[in-house]
Length: 605
Image (cartoon, rainbow, N blue to C red; front, side, top):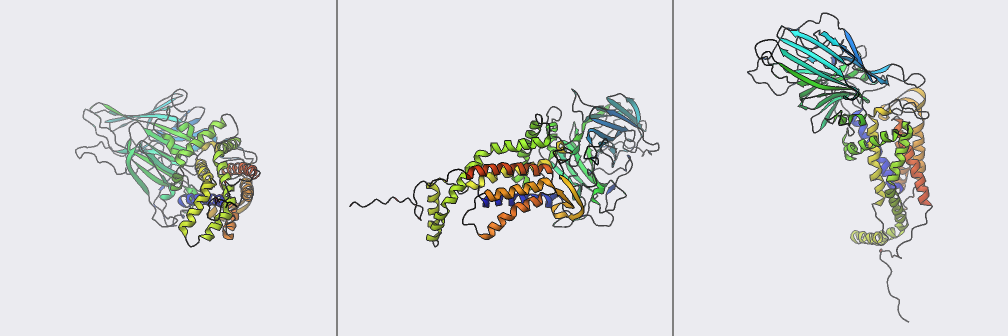
């Protein structure tokens, strides 16, 4: 592979980074006037109107009740296992918050995980799985605690003496489901002698928040799977603005579709609600989780969702049930892709192809394979950093035949360049003959003119997919390696303070070692790579600048990406040094300026 093709590859990688950031990160902050967003309140929130959807029959007269005042303060109980502590509330008979015992909230001053667990749905727009727009049943109502064991909680309320609502929660784990899952069932019992149609209502998915004050929330979103494809709406899409255009803020966004599952999530954690029967729509809201912060502060906002459902009418003295499985935990693909516990493709919540550039380079297929390979290696190599090193070397070994063939082709091409240039000069006024002559030269010497592009076509999908993997792989959060305390973040060893350069994702002037090593190895690799003799000075200058540009754009990315690129470049350096020591390729036969063998017979004397 020559320098020109290497430079093209680096340029494409930079383009990928720009495409991702322009698509996901650089929407301008909302205007300072008040924005119609839903503020976070106490665990009890105001009801919202349900989203539009398939209309009921006009003959239906749904059950209604006078709005029940919340009155008494909410009371709480918990269920716990080795992975989570789930706190339930009498406000709506729902889930108040979920603590993840295996995942720390932050790193302490020494770069170690803190003792405090990471908490989902705190702060919140509403208790998770609480009903909305259903007076007497919704999150404003106070339920009675019926029973509480070490694995199950049951709440109940009665509305106007006509409707009894029982809400049952079971914490799964062991042989029954995943330990991050809660199995939920709501039973509606008709206490009257008349049929009782129920209204369309909604259940809250929970509230997803940025991971901390340095998280700008670009990965905070809500979405759904309809049984065929996924759609995710970023929080900032509701904020208005845009990089290339401007739009007004939206108080919410409604999606009318069959909902196999719906989720709210941030970079590393997700809440996924999978109903037994599909929902009819999803309402997504941008909510202010820090009411004291200024309006333009991105970190002050999260996203919440409301799954819209149609409840079955209840016959006289009969009952109907609505049930679902609710996951609150890390975005770990190997866990979420298990068909035993997640039979409805919940693993698609990872969203390995968030933008068109990822789809072009097949990240939706390459990303899962790379992450599964990485987690498999980690089963044998306890350090995630060393697992990345091993994975990178394995991928380089697998692609070695392609890169060696391309490098040999590049060396032959370099040796043929004088003859090719001679043919161009000879037939400069006849492009067709010039092309024919060049093709004969390639054919006689078994050179593929596009052979130098093969390594780019092989390595580009791997790099782009790994970049996508790092946007949501919870396995790498707070994973240390050498001096890096967190492979999902830059390996900063010293900070000089505020240095705002948003185009490159830089908010502080930091010293990050791995991107510097990556840039140095790429520059050295470029120097080892042979240069075609016909490259003009402008192209040579661009080739020299490209590694610096790439290192600069990667400077504030996850250190795992820089580690992958550094090991990849070191392997390529060794490979290029080996190739450069090989004997010079011999041409198939002497050729003339037109690329033809000299086969003119000698005259007899």
